[in-house]
Length: 245
Image (tube, rainbow, N blue to C red; front, side, top):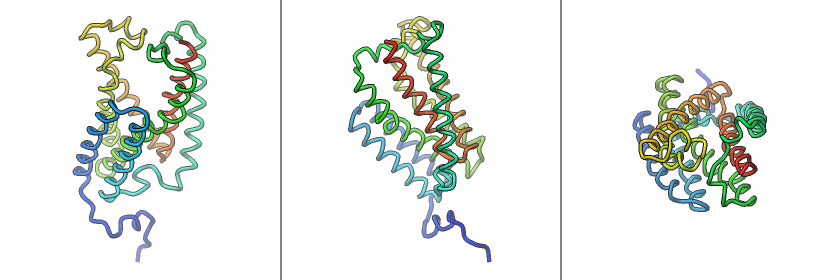
């Protein structure tokens, strides 16, 4: 008689829905969450991010998924943490070099930093980015969506679906990107078509980043690896942008 595994134990007693209905529910939750997080900031945004992350993990569980499907299997956490720390260090070195070189320094300029003080920047780096951005996005795209689709179609399909939706997730945050970052204003201008091109560029860029995040998830077997890189890219961006304003 075959021995049961921890994943088998997690599935016992459930009447799971199908993979693609679960993907549909996940996308519906993310559409609502995207609108809410675009308009709700501060504590309401943080609470929303935590609740949405929990709901999405519940959808994965409802579909018969396990902690391993979410990239949260206990046996992979140490490996994922090592990957995360290495990636954070790498991003720190790259950002430092970019900030010191005159040719790349302007890429970090952002008009949104003009009214921030040090305490607000640290709030973003230590709370808003890890909880309001990294937690909900990694849980959604490299955890739940990736885990659901991979079980049914494999890693290539999982990467494609997750990354495409991750790019579309960034449409709303990118609406004013061309006017907020001087380096992009010089490229796209301030016209409507220029703003649309900037949004399209942001969607394509974040979709490509999603592919990288998915590959980190696949290679490390853990959600912690893309979480570490995601946090470093955003948090160090705030720090460098604030220091160079």
